[in-house]
Length: 481
Image (cartoon, rainbow, N blue to C red; front, side, top):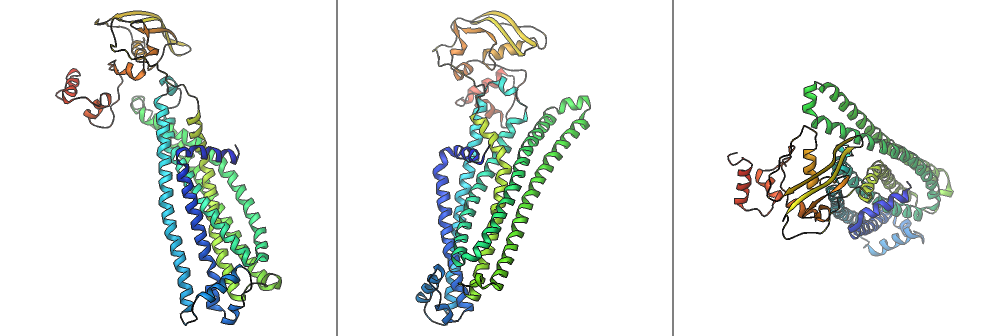
């Protein structure tokens, strides 16, 4: 998958937040322009501190020369001239930091909304999947998608916005450096090309490790889920040590891979920083020993300004490298989330039929066949008629299909062959919500949500009265509980 494919995936995931994203980018661009204004005032400040008035006025006709001339014309010729020029620089930097704080708030709002939207879309899709399709996946997969991998979506968009901001800042600083001395900037260009190749090489390895990390997180999530849900069985079989060992191995493998990614990212920053420092040293040597490179900029103030801009550039290169690496470490998880959201899994399909009276006469099962696996049929050719008002008892051994038959009535599962009819109407034509709201069912395996009994009851009937709740408790024998 190419970088263009990744960009298309990220753009499609923005969906209803593209305006918000565009505002984030525009704010970032505006702040970079403010930064450029602040950095443009560095040379005048340096000139006022290290250059005589005569040298400062002979500033040339270039961009920085015009800035120097503007400062000399704008600032009053007083003993506080140096203080005023420094104050202008600090005011611009404070404005830059203020806007940067605003950008952080706007960006964090976008990434939080995206993460929550992803979780909502994933859960909605899970809700509408057939139970048989869900059970084909390992237990921890959907929890991993909902929690862990959506955090990867957060990380990718957070770093993407940071990388965009850093790119704008790099562009501004590079432009100022070229305007100050295009000859020294030619040396910088050669080093920058080498820096780009090093980063691309390391990012390639980080991306591979990101895919491995995703697979290992899946294994770890499955091991953890099985260890907890199978605790009763492991106690009875006294297999706790073996299961704990498997969980520990999965944990070590996952964390070691995460550590390798962190080391690669650290190496990326280390090499970028040292290469930039080396470039600064080479530029100083070129300026000091070669008149070709030193001509055209003020002797002291010019090189100090150049070094200040280079130090800013080194910081931005380091941030850009780290952010770029983080994006590609998390992109496999984002691709997995996108594949699930855009995939065609077996979805529940209901009709629209909603009769005024749910059951008038009878329920019929006609030639029902059902199996959980190809080699293990549960129901084979079942025919049954149930009259309204009748009390039916179905007796059979464990695994004989009693619970399965009830699950077919509510369309938790659908039969492989045959039809279930209510008043001669196939239940597949009924609205799913209507059908399930008119069938009461107590399973042998039930699940209580982590809330009060009242709230558990209200999940089934949100508008239930107080009397309805107590009647339900009475029928279940829980009135005195």
